[in-house]
Image (cartoon, rainbow, N blue to C red):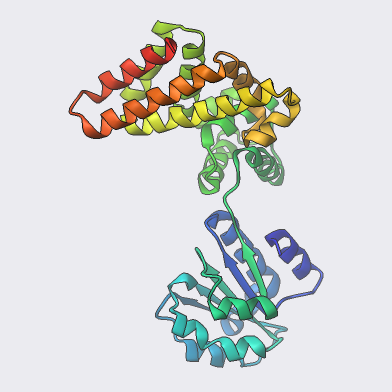
Length: 330
């Protein structure tokens, strides 16, 4: 069951008595938990019918006693166990009898960063409750998330503004939420967010600069390429981090080049590569700068530079400059 299906079921009055929320995408996970709490226990009933426990020191016997106590002047009792990944196997096993005979008036929610599905507890949980995983979103899923967030705030992006925003913020939903909140405050009563507003508020331009560096490399613009490289270095981006960013960028370009050579329709390329469709056109244009053989040579250069950065006493900035010049000559 997905978190969307879970919330829909709760809206329909079909509330599972056992719910386990887990996964690395903590933003969506925590928002789901808040939505469940608000739907299941009204604010005025929480003093008597909502209890939150934490981690490995959670008193399992007390939790089970509370779970088997009927709610006070309310339809349900809600018990939440956060940081459940810290519960030991022995502690989890203490819940096994309750899993098999859960009290329908109690909703017991576990929240964890990860689970070990091989444990008996989780095998039993699957039979009687709902395990809901929260995975990080891919690049090409971010625009839909942003659009929905903006719609709820009664704002809207221009296409160009959305493309720039998605390029700059990455895939961390907590950071995206924070940047959107800053944008909302900046535009005030205004509803439309364009490129100018994004540039004014979302200040991290490293991804833009890597894109520009890739563009300059492909066009063999030596001066421009070195200028973008120095901008990244002046911004404090470590050479190994910069190399990783370049390798990721060129990995996507190589994938795109292979798809173009296979005559895959351009509209299908963002989905197959897993990139944001709002700047796919620019990546497709860059992908054509190099042949498959040149991409292989470029990745040999990346490997050589990686080894040199980790093992030699050479100047890291000089090594990166040499890499940029070599890529242009690939």
